[in-house]
Picture 1 (cartoon, rainbow, N blue to C red):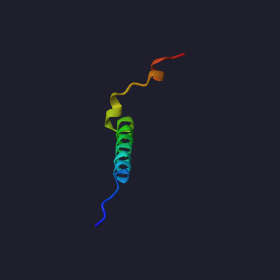
Picture 2: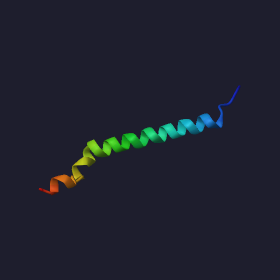
Picture 3: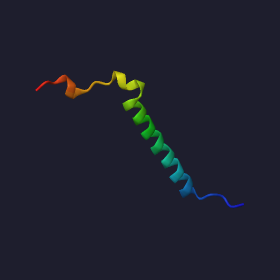
Length: 46
């Protein structure tokens, strides 16, 4: 039985991390934690 190459394992791990961080960013920006975020442009009336 042939084992997978280390390069493939590293590539899959990097893709999982990338998608995880992207999902976390979208959840933080648009999910329930977004209620605590402040918009600096709304605070200034020019």
